[in-house]
Amino acid sequence: MAEKVWFITGASRGFGREWAIAALERGDRVAATARDTSTLADLVDRFGDRVLPLQLDVTDREADFGAVTEAVNTFGRLDVVVNNAGYGQFGLIEELSEKEVRDQFETNTFGALWITQAALPFLREQGSGHIIQVSSIGGISAFQNIGIYNASKWALEGYSQSLAQEIAPFGVKVTLVEPGGFDTDWGGASAKHATPLPEYEHLRERIAESRRSRVSTPGDPAASAAALLRIVDAEEPPLRVFFGTAPFGIMKADYDSRIAEWERWQDVSALAQGEPGSGERG
Image 1 (cartoon, rainbow, N blue to C red):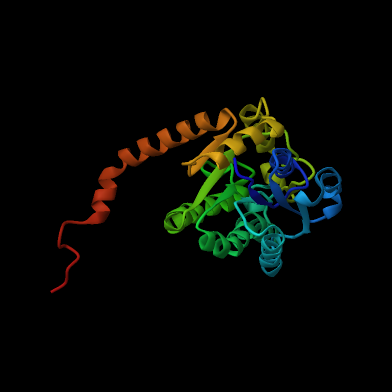
Image 2: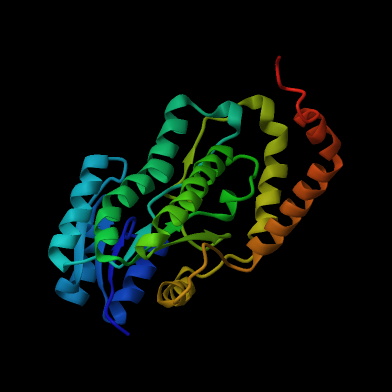
């Protein structure tokens, strides 16, 4: 299989690091970004000039465009763009500050958008490429205490589905990867927490128990690399794919409930439509 050139954000840990290593181990080249490039030093020692470490804060749009251009100038092309940088913002909706909400969107939603926009001219011109958007089961369902994280991923899902249709004629593909619970530090060191309101204290243990039941057996980030390689090597990759065994059941229960409710209220939907011609004015 032909060598691929990757651009991976958030490559210092978690999925980004495991996927960068898997790509490098099979002979591909990787532009790997991190806020602190010292976290990538061992990859440079091991893989030499096949890895390009780039210091990057994805919330900086100008820097995003510069980093993508530097990767293309160094490696000559781009084949796989992985928007992995992101974090989890914990907090009930009433508890969140304006800054916490805006920061969550700046990284999870806009950061991926800027990298995508920066890469698209190169991918369109070469007539190929694959954009991997790291979403979440929280991008199609929603859970208490991470509502603004859910919102940031729902936004990513929406514009990525539109994007897939827009760039298909140019030979460029899009896949939304939707992980369930994995053994990363998403809920640990990289997470942020709103100041709790005492009025919700009686709910917190119930919310925590609900989360524990969803991620009772976390997935292995290292194992996820083989799954990602299969996707990027596929002739017809999926628009959406779950990582882990739990998300499918969560999605099915959620969507079954939605469909049933929409059906129950279909008479109201018809009422809102009005009779043919009733909206016309003489």
